[in-house]
Amino acid sequence: MESKKNLCAPIPESLHQKVRQEQEQRGQTLGEYITEILNEHFEGGLRPMNTATRTIAFQVPEELFNRLKDYLAAHDLKQKEFILGLIERELNDAEDA
Image (cartoon, rainbow, N blue to C red; front, side, top):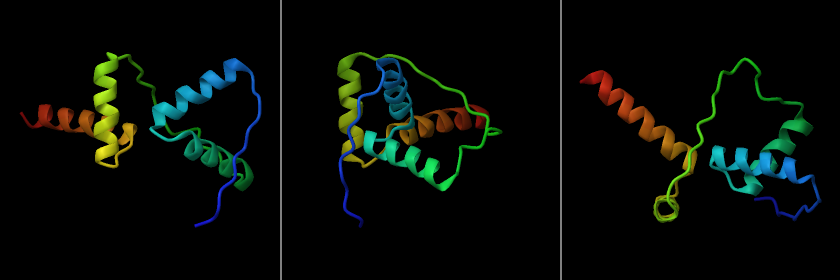
């Protein structure tokens, strides 16, 4: 595994908010998110524009959020994959009923 170095740079607060929101929505650590963005930049790979995606964002009580984070950590899951799995399972169950 390649060694890692920190990268720190001041950016506008509005951009910082966008970065953190998307990073959380993707269920990635900040390091994973920034690494992906930089790799896309340097490898010339942009996210496909024809990939239709929509954002779901909602707030939950802090106690529930903390329980979720503990569960994800205990089961080595990313927030995004966990939530997508719940949605898929419920929709499939509804279609099967």
